[in-house]
Image (tube, rainbow, N blue to C red):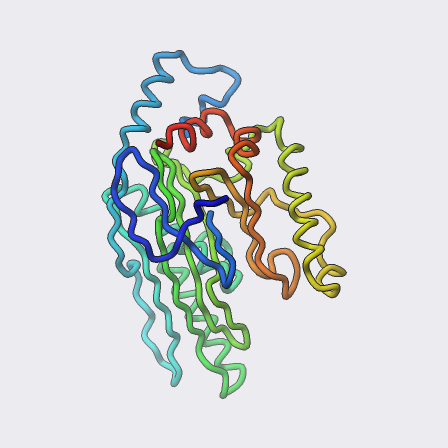
Length: 289
């Protein structure tokens, strides 16, 4: 893909044009529906289909304001206090605001292995609790530190790509620019997983594309990683993203193998059109001017 999104670029509110920012992960640039009922065996009437398309295409572009997420740190009763900064965004869309808060909570939970059922405040409390427990293990242990930033990386019609980046120091583990991607459908008010947007009959074709790219990546890794990494990449639960040219999948460092590098797999527009649900492809790519 040529139009990768760059960090720090403001999103300009243009209702019909796709808007992008660029994200980087270390030295690598990464990026990266219509009603899902229309994907069932019974297609909607043409009049209904036209009405859905019109509603989706007329959604105004999100007006984005950077601000801290709504949470409070528990009172610090230890010598070394947990450092936690969650930079989020607000828009004019209440549902998107709620969805973003949920994804921030999910990302925070993943840093300490919590179950993905907590509110943002509960996730903050659990993170601080883990930090305090770590300090109690040894008096020289330092409190956890985490900085989380959030941006709308791409938006087009009802589809929104959220990028969350994490820097942290937790015990002996230092993480820099760990990336997370989530896609929402504003018309459906729904978080979209990869399997929901791929045509079921194209799962085998997509798997073949992914495994070819994975094997090429694996061959470029050192022999130690190759010996531990799986021969086939499990991609069904992967983070996915989209830009102006197609969709992609992102695997964070250590997702594939311990001490492994991050991997982003890009599909070009032709590959994307082959595997994506047709209604989603039309709204996500064909309407791009």
